Amino acid sequence: MEKHGVVPDVISRAPAQKLKVTFGGKEVDDGNILTPTQVKNQPSVEWNADPNSYYTLCMTDPDAPSRENPKFREWHHWLVVNIPGNDITKGEVLSEFISSAPPKGAGLHRYVLLVYKQNDKLSCNEPRLKNNSGKNRGKFSISKFAKKYKIGDPMFGNFYQAEWDDYVPKVYAKLSN
Image (cartoon, rainbow, N blue to C red):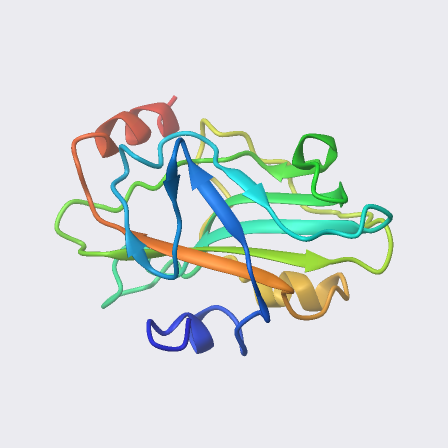
């Protein structure tokens, strides 16, 4: 994460443990390159969870619209809180999953997935975002979110990189509905 600038662009220090993230058989591995076509569906995410604790999961892109001009840093793609253990399906979805969709010619974007251990169940006053709109997703900061809800530093993390491919226009079409 340091090598690719995730530290300090997204978080102040790398998580101690690696998050297992799989998109339909394609595993995320510390900045490997995957295509938007390969990551179009919500991934499987696993971590060594305490079954009696709650967790927050975030997927965020610090490179919107490009790494050279990140004026929308961060654009968050997925945010789930109050996950019991690592059962994401039982968590509270604040922002539904939107696949990677870097603009044509913008180069590689970093897609960072982080898991925070919560001290207790959270009561969040954030807007609930559906996956058919990009509204309220830009200029997000997972670090500020973590500070606001007192969830500390991420315990688990991983990231991949992606650039435009011919699946991206399908994402944009869905977001314009």
